[in-house]
Picture 1 (cartoon, rainbow, N blue to C red):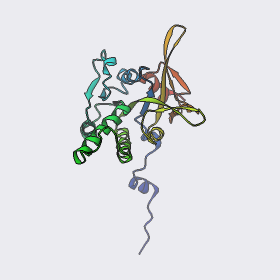
Picture 2: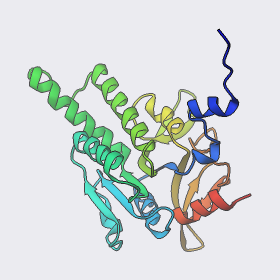
Picture 3: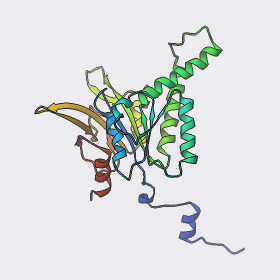
Picture 4: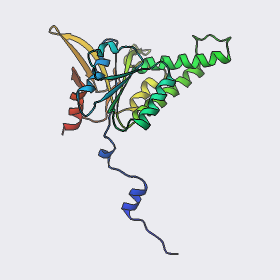
Length: 250
């Protein structure tokens, strides 16, 4: 029997091979920091660029009052992880390119909501247990749920912005690290799931409020810029600003 040799083009077609710039049409970002530094406000600026609007915001934290002047931003109030999964399914199958950006505000509150759901289910089976004291098994279950949710939204054909509170960790030597406020290993793993991780702070300089987002990882701060276009720090960041830097920097 004669040996049939596939051409390079045929092999690439069989494997659905694409160049990198054909895969990176969409961006996934985690903006984390202390309360009140402007994470939700930053995410809402996605409405201001045609490349990232229209925007749908999944409100878990109840902080959309800061976006009350944005009349064209669509908000869905999420009260359970089941509702969030249902929205994901609709965005995956029915969005058809309409929404260009999805905001999840915030991952910290989502994890708490997920743990409440887990404990409700557990108490139905074991009413003798304390609903406010999850075991290691419940923590592990919630962490795995969060991994699946973040990956699921990240893989939607749209931009994804996750907000998250920050937490300060201190080791035995007194060294301080700022990380996303998520349980266990997830706080360190989460940066590997997305393209950009920015740590947000707010200060007053010369009497003027300045919001700052750090993209360079240091010994103290978990951060990341897979696009290699944002530099170490951006002052008063907006999504149109970051989008322009990521797509127009040479």
